[in-house]
Image 1 (cartoon, protein in one colour):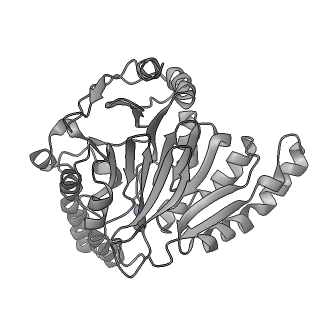
Image 2: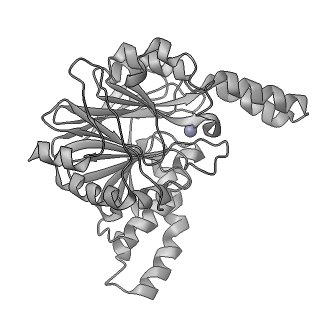
Image 3: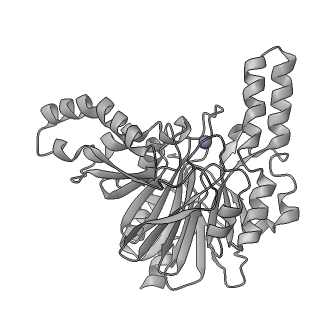
Length: 358
Ligand SMILES: [Zn+2]
Ligand SMILES: [Zn+2]
């Protein structure tokens, strides 16, 4: 049954194997109707899956939402970061909002939290009937309380308009779950923050200085594992916590492209933007550093996200040199809607891309 689910769910995507540590795959994107049907099948099967619901960063890109990933473990959906526009991507993938069990925030830069209120509202409209837990390091209570306050009037409007049969206004609020009171001073901490139905979620510190605290998350489910690195420079603690994972989702910044933009802005007298473009180079890993971390941790697939600048991610300069560090078939540029599936009880890995509606 499990094998059948994996095969039919991703029939158009070749199945790879990670037994030798080097997954291989080929893919044919599925049409949207097929993606939605397969998502339903995926939620009824037993596997660990990651779906990217935002792969951009604060530099503008009309084709990508900001930071967001969905991790699906068995029937439960977890969202990691809620960057601006990311709810729309979640909706387009067909993921059922009422089945979102919790949200995890890596840190509180706006490109990771901007759509938190939209997740609160849209999961309520989709039929969520329990308050929504939001996990995060110290500071998450303040963020969640702020979004709860900002969206309370909206929930009241919808309740009064659509009625109690449609809107469970009592369940509308999000509930903060704050952890890691010792995080921030040292960069070698981790903490198990959730264990449920075979899933273990571990938060660990990363290096996004001066943004403190900043964490990544590791999801272990019945022998399969996905690590979401969050925003970080090259980090020994990320390597430690990604050891042997099937998938590492890594943020990246192209230093040559950002330097070029920085110099261009400086040349035209835009010293404000030039300064920002200089500053951001210190707290994100480069694509090559992501590959080095993936190699050191021995992960199967390196999946790039949070591209800086994402509008240039397909420019050959962006990933230049990565395949010298890590074989080309073991890394991939993530897109909004990229989906990787890890069926339980196998070494299989399947990947597919979401197509926009025709
Ligand atoms: Zn950040
Ligand atoms: Zn960010």
